[in-house]
Length: 634
Image (cartoon, rainbow, N blue to C red; front, side):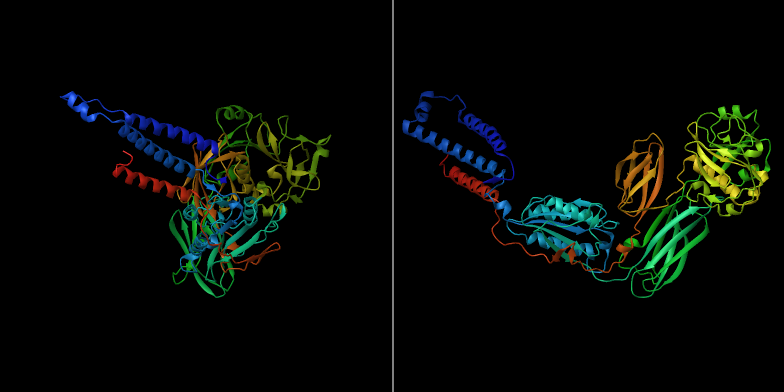
């Protein structure tokens, strides 16, 4: 005999405790209440018990007590879920992986693919053999167990209600690894895949995923071909010199074999902004860059539909979302003896608040106010720790860089060209005309460990970035008036890029994230946890690691991230062409294991003995009821 419920020790403790309570109640019941009545001698005569009658009454009460203890024993024993030895190994162990990726939201079949998958799994649950056990799990960007390994049909059907496809791709290798772990050490195991195919290669960092020897692979296919167009890319960015305006990139694809006419709509902060009509070739793609847009403060949304206003068979990829970086004003202090080129550049951006100071005034101003950037033009002044500085041709003892060369002539670089530009560094974004910039003379500087030349000539570095006194700095190795840089767009762009980089704002700002992946959202320093509110209004908390909230978005839409007093909105999109290509694809094998249709379990009487124990307890209750009314046990 094997026990799948309470242990023998637990059963014994429970039976002794409750049984003692039953005996105490019976003892209390045997005590007769004393009632004074007249003619005591007459009543004593009537109530006196003959020896045979008293003995019979005691036996009747004892029989009633034994029936109650037997009833209790059957009920307690049922809690152990006893089964005959070996029964647990006689049935099959089934792991059912139900595809919950975005393509399962397709409506190409009655009830949708999700409904068809749910019905197929329900049918398998009801066709389980008498000794079969099953585990349900949903596979999408991650794996979610819906039930434990159990033979309880009711609990399996109840767990199936939690199945719901999400706006992600499918990590098939993770799902199959989960199935292998679930059946490890179990005999007669089967892995059943329910979905629309196209699961991709079951391969991860550990290599190919292979089912153990003797494990059967089953597949239930759902879905059929249908019409679908979707948004495969959507992003937005502000213009560097005018942060009130922005441009948007939208990519739409036609995943069907017929030409489609569509409408592409753009919404800014939930308000309609623009509608574009497009013609897409069969399996074709078009990109649109909507330039010089305005009207959105933070959020953008793109929607696509057929020109006849009908919907396609996969609504999950018909919408895409993006956010724009927040606009904030930057305080800049210019320390200079007078340079119109620098002053004019600071006036180009309305989000820059600039002040000017002489060399004598600068130390006091830097101590009084917190500046996002200090620009030192041809001069160097001691700055408080943590003060970011842009040095233009720095000289003097407070310069962050040391001049290289024994004499002024040896330290000069005559007519240097921008021959090496680190295009990956955020400081060099949108600096396409820097290569044609002419410089008359520059100073050769010696770099320290950690310094980086983001622009240089063959003679030496021209623009250097680094860190001093816990603050970033940028150094330009020449006087602006000794070059034509101030006459080019690159000069104000360099100034704005410097503010953005020194601020610590993410230069590779992502207007949206891909669902199903790990997102790292920048949050203010000193915060350990962040609260997330998803598109479905669900809330949860996530850890903050190295200044970024780490979360995984499984639904497309806008997410609100609250960290301390800071609140921001981030966007998540389904941009997975494999999911948008909704035509079902065959699934025949898994790295050498052939997939076959599932088979019904062996029909028979279920082997759970607790059902019979409860039936016996019910029979005893009926027996005692009859005996009570027949005055056999009372």
